[in-house]
Image (cartoon, rainbow, N blue to C red; front, side, top):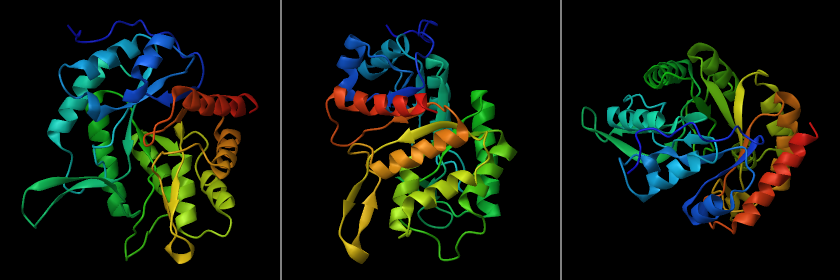
Length: 296
């Protein structure tokens, strides 16, 4: 039987670097107990009231601090939050007592037709960086935080489309104001920064990403994400995809080192969600992040 809440048995984080805990690695992580600062899971995979997945999460919570990373709140949706989704997230938070709760600066909920029922697009769609979008985000982040009785972290997005009207605010200024007005924190995805810089055709993608970091207030970042990306096409047809399918690229490591210099030893997660390798490969990436952090 799964308890309503886990006992306070998980040890304090033994380091600042964690990995995404995905199904192919459940058995190895639970049996071998590698040294990790924390593990992170996608919240929506554990919304059921029982079952094998939730049992695994409870077991993992007894070994490590757990970070709940969501992909479905759609915090920037003008149609508002989904009450069912927020109910399930609150229930999971009560059960797991996570290290952190996070989601993305995106929208996904909208009516198919004006006045029609609201549907979820099952994607992380970009928002415009405008005062109007900011007001929506602030309001809905505060609703989530009031419900969960804790601050949440909001992640910057990899975006493949934009808005014809353009952005009225620079993205770092948008996040700075979001955190200031709502009391939330930022989950800084360094890989997303690089993907956006490459797709935008930045002359010097690393310098472009470093400038983004330098525009953020120093105390804003609560967690950093690292991952790999893939590429298709060439020339004008080149497209870089944030699919978490490979080792972290050299340019992303360079930007991560700059993030550590600017923000300090922020807890860092290595994500790998597609073409998932043996656990040792993922742990090797985590060790590289820990080595860079140790030199900060």
